[in-house]
Image 1 (cartoon, helix red, strand yellow):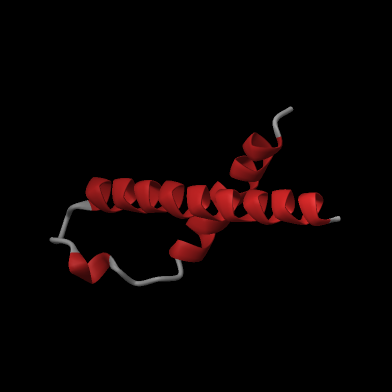
Image 2 (tube, rainbow, N blue to C red):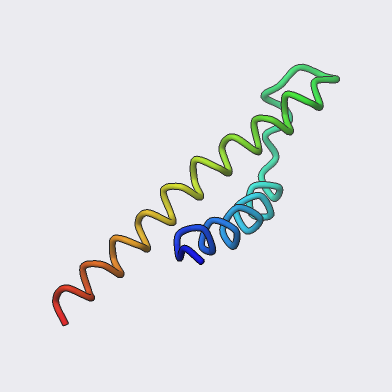
Length: 66
């Protein structure tokens, strides 16, 4: 199995869990539950993508050095 895929599967729920601790609901209109959920999902995908690529790049660099 691809290492990046495993990292994505680990980081997406972790990032969603961390983002739920933020109170950003006040930035949206009342009753826009679906838009808030979609926002959390899209931002969690973006952050997970950045984290996975960062970790994978660090791994590649340390593998080249050693």
